[in-house]
Length: 197
Ligand SMILES: Cc1cc2nc3c(=O)[nH]c(=O)nc-3n(C[C@H](O)[C@H](O)[C@H](O)COP(=O)(O)O)c2cc1C
Image (tube, rainbow, N blue to C red):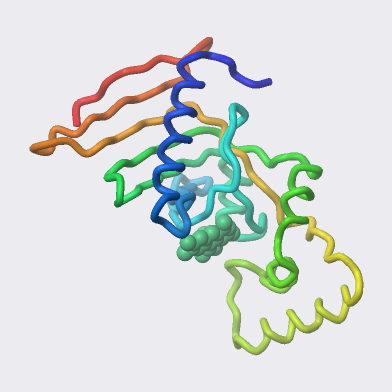
């Protein structure tokens, strides 16, 4: 169920404006850092692309057998961090993570280039790869397997949605007096708080 709290909508609108502003001079304005942690709480972070955001949350796509996929299986919480140097603005998003529906993953999968689809089948993401040729061999194997037909989505490749509980905006200010505004979900609704830089 979508959260219709006005402050949440305000935070999403501000995030959207930043993405639009960043898109003016960046090739990949949706680049973000995704931090996960394993069952013991050990963190790991990597660069990802955000593919969608709305009141339901922030969506990215990956291989669920990867290291991050295994982390999320054990500990379904994540933190996202966006930084746009041209704007000198940062956004941090934290929340629980759920897989999106198969239909939603399928509809994004269909927009991907065929080569990327074949790559998703061939890559055992995060596993040791003895020889690069093995990967190329696997791509050829799937090319032959799906010859003259659409490439189906691998069952282990899908989207995850981060359902925000905290969204923090950081804007560079004079004399390091940066502006920080935190939107936070309480049991019932969202709050907005200014933070010391
Ligand atoms: C700019 C950039 C964008 C990336 N986008 C994605 C992405 O959307 N999905 C993905 O699975 N990996 C993406 N990667 C690769 C990840 O950083 C990472 O290497 C891979 O997902 C394996 O991470 P893991 O071993 O922690 O699971 C991207 C890398 C870069 C540099």
